[in-house]
Structure formats: C-alpha cells, structure tokens
Length: 231
Image (tube, rainbow, N blue to C red; front, side, top):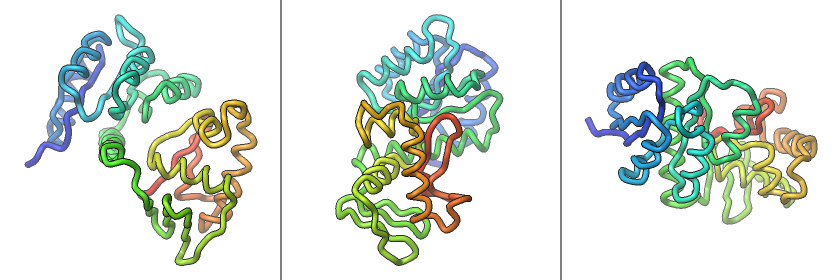
C-alpha cells in the first residue's frame, strides 16, 4: 500500500517514540524520530517531512522555541503533543505557529484524525487556498464573495465575510482569538475577544441550521475557533 506521508516525531520519551512508530507504521506513514529539539530541527531541514509531531517538554530546547524556529523557514503542519493541558500553553503554541494541539495521553483514532486534517492542510497550502470551500450545505466562494447555505445565497456584511473567509481559508485548523482578531480587524483589536464572539454569533445565526449547536463554526473554549468542513 502507498505510504501516506512522512512524519517527523520530536519527543524525548522512548515509550512515545515506540508507540508512534507502531501506530503510524501500521497505518502506512513513514516515521522519523528525534529525541531532542536540536536533532529535530536538523532532521526537519535535512529530510523535509510532510508533518511534524512535536513535544513541548524537550531536554534541550523548549518545544515552543522549536516551533518558532521551524516557522522561520517552513509551513509544514505542526501538531503539538504534550502533557501540558492548560489553555495558556495551547494558546501560546498555536500563536507561535502550531497547527493543532493534542494532550497526552491521547487516543489512536484522535491522533490519526489530526494527521488526516494536517494532510489536508498540507495539500491546500501547496496548491494555495481553494477558491471554493464546501462544508455540508454551506458553500463559500472566496474569489466571488458569495456564500450559499442550503441552496440560498446568504448576505453577509463585509466584516462577516472577511471573518468567515479567514476561518474557511484555514479549514479544520484551530485559530486563536488573537490570530483571528489580528488578521480580520488588525493588531489594535487583538484583545477584543468579546467583539469576536458577537460576530461569530451573527455568523452562526446566518450559516448554522441550529446556531446553539453549530457543526461548522466551532468554539475551542478559551483558545479560539475552528471551521469544520467534515461533519
């Protein structure tokens, strides 16, 4: 069977590395492992993996610093794998360029699902953002500024569309409140989380069958939002 992708795992726990080799190898991923941040950075530069799974608690360099250094030269999807479960740690990692965050201990199916999302992100980033994003009954034409829901065109304000387009352009990825506010409204709005919540509520009323139980515009409590295409 064809190998799915090349995954670099940067973690100092031998048990985790063995587990990753077993799980990912069984699902036809090619796996390379690194035990330190420096080794991980060197392997990333030498081998250009498709996805990186990165632990934060490394023996030489903190994983946040590894993430920052990687983002200086590559947009490879980075999945943080850490025992740190505090919202602040997650927000910091995502703000520093990580694409996703998985807390140890983790389930095999959840890990594989996150990898599939990362692969879709990889495919999109290589080809540029898709001009049309489809999520169930929702269709977003990014080039023509047209949004269709259940076969009907939905009228959005300029700001609502800009917010939706930013989320849809990063479909299935967690975006922090600060990332969204900075990119949609500008740096001076980075701390106006309540302002963002108001606009998200407006979008849900227009684009979700049940705004109180959204399936596409999903909250990541204390962190940000994720636009889901697969439900």
